[in-house]
Length: 305
Image 1 (cartoon, rainbow, N blue to C red):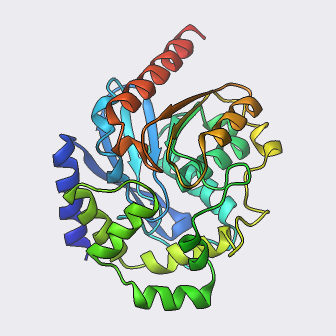
Image 2 (cartoon, rainbow, N blue to C red):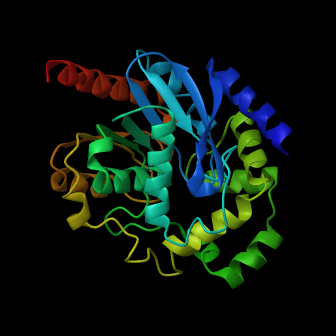
Image 3 (cartoon, rainbow, N blue to C red):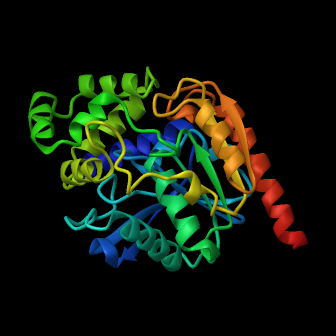
């Protein structure tokens, strides 16, 4: 399983022309190591992807962010990072500690974070709970549980253990199931390389348990669990510069949610682009320019400050 995942990961990187070093760093909070794809040179940028997807999914965007060292991190169980059955016992504390341990091991004091979906939720928690470790945030796609948002019905159904067991038996990992997933997040069709990568990710040891436990922790059949949601009061505590890049067809939350967030956070801007929940797969060139411009402005402010 690991070998076929690594092969699929390399094909995904090759398709986008990304030359990346696979690096493993200690992550005691998951009783093992975290896997990081390292590419480029310059000020550090840490990339954290969404639930169920590996770091190599960022590959189409990575060549467009020049002048920076990119650290694309596999979340626990979604790639080559270890996981633990206790991951969701206190998900917020574990997520923040995981990110902190990774950047400590990478010797990064205060990087910029780029997140998508669950990765955006984790990095926002990090910005609130460890503000001295986060220089700025970029969210590409609606962050998970942002301002009363939830998830499509199939994901909410998977948050119910009894329903999840039946659904996983009826729809085990397969090319058809990956295609249905891409339609749910409105990013269809996928490239063959990405479809294969997502399929191999779902077949990894620990994936199913971590995926379902995370959904159960975050969601109910009705929507987000209130104790896990990012409220307006919490977002008002984010004082780092924030760039919001929102797909105009994102099923997790409309651009109107991004507009609300822009007014709540101290220093945020919003850009609406073409695409669904992972819009860098659709509007790659434009998003690359937006992110590069944001990072360059941040770098200039850092030098002047």
